[in-house]
Length: 93
Image (tube, rainbow, N blue to C red):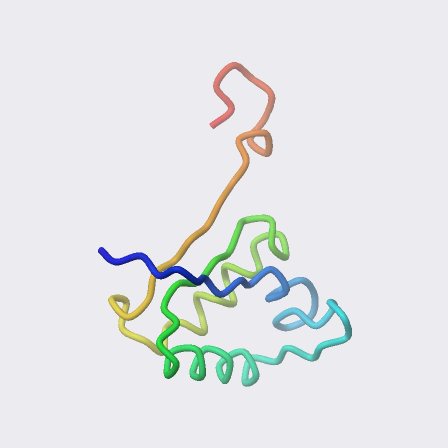
């Protein structure tokens, strides 16, 4: 697997509203996010970065909906988590 050197971040996708319109007053509608994905895809960008805490999970949901437009082999996903969110026991994960 070839890993791209650049990932497209989605931290502002899903922070509030339908698809995330709270950061810097940018109106990120579903159509505008699809346009971002289309332009990125056409330019050869294939690695998308997200995290469970981006919009408290909404970023992952929105990104998943937008990426349904493409074959699964056309892109890669990067996500992250923190074990501390799972609890404070001996084995929080």
